[in-house]
Image (cartoon, rainbow, N blue to C red; front, side, top):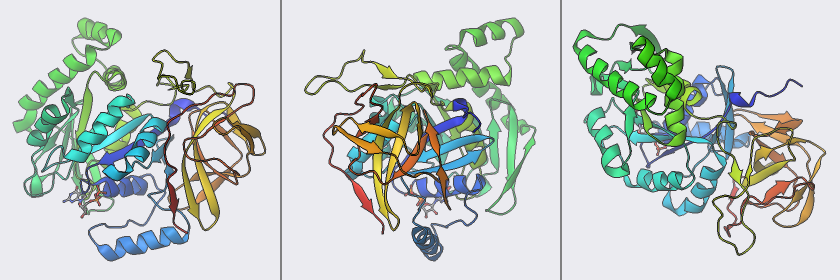
Length: 413
Ligand code: GDP
């Protein structure tokens, strides 16, 4: 089997205040990544219900614990992050197992309470974040006002990577400040196409100013980029992207993109942004080993790095019962696991034998024979492993989580 390139994996979550567009954005992403050719329109109750009913029929839903899609030769695992406050425990755990997140903010209302709550949780786990200001087509949408609420409510350095061209009915596209070009969409709502253009003359000054802010802010965290800038007076797109990614991972600033998921404007650039600016499993420091029973969290605790050759370690983060039985979703942190292998459930202290393993796509489940560090898979037939349990190789029986969480089991059979 070809070796998995860990730099081409992204484990991300999408989070939003209710109604800001998480479902729509997720569906558009699945559409563009080709795993889902039918789109459930959330504004049209029937279609959505049909869509969800069909998905349920197949035992997989887009609200599955983790769905894998492909974009430009990368595998993006989208991990479901429940938006509602009641699911705080689940939000906590899902934030733990992902390496980056998209925060969707409403273009009319700006930052809303649930986003604030989830933002603080993401802070706790140092999750790198991309912000997407959505619904710019709506009456009353105002990118700049929504942008201001990022600073006011989240107290962050928000860094626009794009500026909108037009607004409300007249929202046409964006100025891409990284490549300094305009992206204009045309055509129908589904499968809308875009093309690159010159930046509209009336926006040029504003775009230049915004790009200068982008350069100053991004290059401040990237010595090599700063050097290139001093030498040439500008930097290459690659350098700028690397600098933005560095700032995103360190939390020095939070990049902001925008569009309308519903009208399909901005979703493809957002997917590019996931590849360019959110980290792969090898870009992040790795999960900390849990403290001994009764001990406090140790800031210097050993971290498990994404190394396929290391002893296996993974965290069960969700269990879903569907008509095929019980699926245990596991984020693999280290090692390589093959079906038929035996591991320890180090939380409960017993052995588990690994049976079938799957990758979940929006429209099918794909059986796999091995899963490597950094990736996510669903296991069938574990005998007694709950959410939050660690599975690890007997030679290095680490425990990754010791929080006393109730076990959320979703039943969709
Ligand atoms: P969620 O609760 O965050 O999952 O939000 P949904 O994706 O279900 O969207 C809530 C409502 O907003 C639905 O009626 C969508 O059709 C609508 N919606 C989502 N994105 C957009 C957008 O970009 N523009 C407009 N005008 N409506 C949108």
